Amino acid sequence: MLQKYPETEKAFLNNSKVPEPGKIFTQPDLAWSLKKIAKEGREVFYEGEIAEKIVSSLEKHVAILTMEDFKNHSSSWDKPISTKYKGFDVYQVRPNTQGIAMLMMLNMLEKHDFSEIADGTPDYYHLMSEAAKIKFSYRDAWVTDTNHINIPYETLLSKSFSDEVYKHFSWDTVFQEDRFEQLPAAEGSRDTVYMSTVDKEGNSVSLIQSIFHEFGSGFVPEGCGFLLQNRGSYFSLDENHPNRLEPNKRTFHTIMPSMVMKDGKPFMLFGAMGGEGQPQTQVALLTRVIDFGYNMQQAIEAPRWLYGKTWGEDSSTLKLESRIPDVIMDDLDKRGHMIEKKENYSQTMGHAQGIIIDDERGIYSAGADPRGDGIAVSW
Image (cartoon, rainbow, N blue to C red; front, side, top):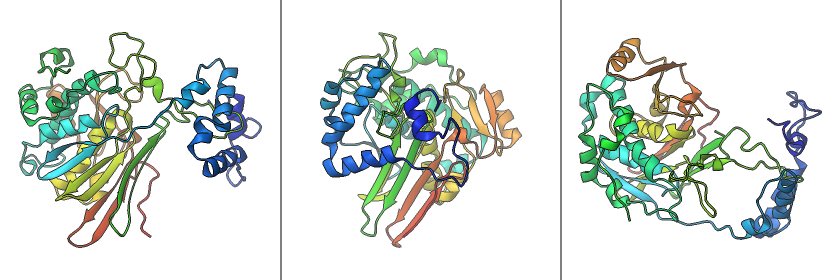
């Protein structure tokens, strides 16, 4: 992939080879870009010399981005969406991200006493995967650029609507995907990094950034040193799809940093990379901390599951780490789940990180995922 474009090969490879361990690897073009931004601000990226280099390089490869596209870009400062879960306020970024799916899942799960279900049981994994499957049907129908669709937030995030949806859940068998049209209607008018940080005053940041595939689009603009992302891959060429390709439109995307508040103060900052697995991983961390009393590291390391099509796969299997006992997998198989066994600490489950703020004791505790290369540090 790095050899596909000469600009990318120049930035990352040495005579068409990956640099050997111990070799000095320099990125002078990236240093130039960072210095330009530090000195001249956003204008140099969207209207100045960096934008000119990006457009000029793309034109050589018959791409269609123009200087006008860059100049017309605007970022938005949005209020988050939220739901209550057992006395905690859980916040997510508004669509076009999929964070609303996690909130909808929590509404479906809140009615359960997890001390009776217990972590790591067949009922726990069944409930979690079915909640993901059912709520993802609404996510797929509604999450796109909010300038192109009126998302019925009040309905999708209401407890009463969740109660109606819950009537289609069964403990004994799976909900078949070909029955999605029977669910109540809501009418309206991998190259990812997650990090969280808290300072001594309690200022808290939950942040995620992604260029989607490994090395994003694989394209480095000449003289700039950085990769362009390819999250536009989520656009559809189906004219009836909510994420159909249109001008001036932001497509659905998966990245969703999360924050939980307790009595109006930050309690838990967490997130994960992992495509469509992100809402499920976040629900796993939250239920294991709030319902089971795990610390953050325990919640991250506990065996995980992943329902659905992810990383470009064709089938909606229920993926389970091999640490989950075979007897539990057999039970889930009998209920109709299509089980796919994954290795222990599988990267398929994503890489999670997080911080818990114990305001009463004045203690911060953090955790990092052994499935990835993150780390929890204090200073």
